[in-house]
Image 1: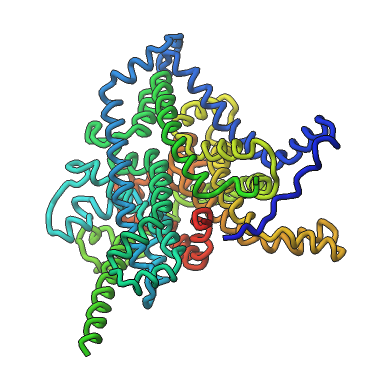
Image 2: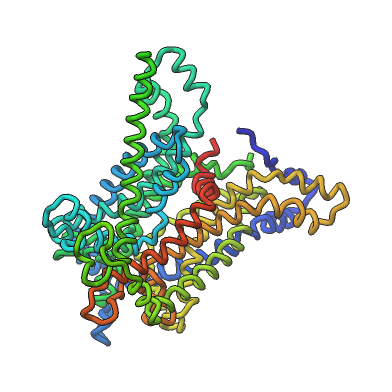
Length: 310
Length: 279
């Protein structure tokens, strides 16, 4: 693919300009980017610094005057809190299972949609729909119309009586998340499928490669970048899943389906424990940064953000 | 002859697969629609087609402000946040796509990193800060965080669209005697419009969908949005079973989006994949 946009003409050789002029020119070029950047930094980093500050204090909002500096105590508490650790485990389970299942389903659907057939447009629209339904509504619908023991479609369809949400809370939540995210995976993978060159596929056929062989040796390697992207973007959002758990199980029964975002929310808005919940927030940010570094490296490769720099 | 039956068999298999897929995608949606049209007495009968049809559930949700007011809040807040995010995002994307400066990669990296910032760790401090500033439970109180988390998405989609615009045309128009404003309005703006429009749709959906901020930073109908309001849905009285009304509310807020997608499907897909498609 050829770059249509030419890089703007490079500035004249440094000898003809003073350094100050250069610097002001450089800032002029950055200027359009600054409002967005300053805004996002203000709204995310100021609260984050406040979070870090809170995390070193013992502060419970229902006990006024209890606020004092406690150093790393909150962090020690966080890592010895068994609920935190089980929430961490649930978060990892939800993320890994949902991303993998949604990606496999998405791959299957994308392969199905990559062929010409009557009504393909309609089928594709219907398949995208779950991604566009308000997630909160999606979660409530699964709760009331699919899993509910009385009105639930599942019990009606299989003729059984199972309390899905209390017997299999984590699986129920994961089913809803997979349902919501499969279309996203499908769209990304479909884009990858449609970007592969027909000639190469035909050449493989002429050379006598079967369908499976063609898929494994040509399509999959070509798709790998799209698959990685789908996994990373999906993981970033699914790690933060909150609506599904809040609306479907309230983290329960007990803490069986509590994940980190929900636990932090509970500590802050139901336990009013600002210090503890802030410390957990900082821990989550640290973990996210580690994952995000990998994600960013991949995104730079996949999107080629720096095109035009050379 | 044998060849023909083989392809016919294959066609039948694919057709069967297609039907299964359509059923999978369609059944939950139809089930919601069916529940929303059932009367209170028949809602638990498990019939796919309602035995007694009624619009009572729809009348109920529009009878009180419980649903209308949040709907108004949702639309207003999402529209304002989308507008501001797209304007700021356009400036940033222009810089990324067209200008060259040291530190560009770092700036892009920072903005992408913010997209991945776990929202939950910002909610408590935002709650406290907004209460201090008097922004808690107001429209700006939700618009500000929405813009922040929409900006990275806006910048990412817009900059990949902007890179595809043949900017030489601008120069050509100026050579032909157009003023810079004319060149922008007549040549560049029409080329950029589809990308901006797609981005606006995606950003709007992002703001529209948010639940975490909506539930933590609002407390009354003054600024509560639809996702948060849904979790407070209890039907006409506290002891009423809300399944019918929830279904009706879900239909009301879902159908516009499905129609929207039917019309703009190509654009939305292009927007989601624009970055990835470029090799």
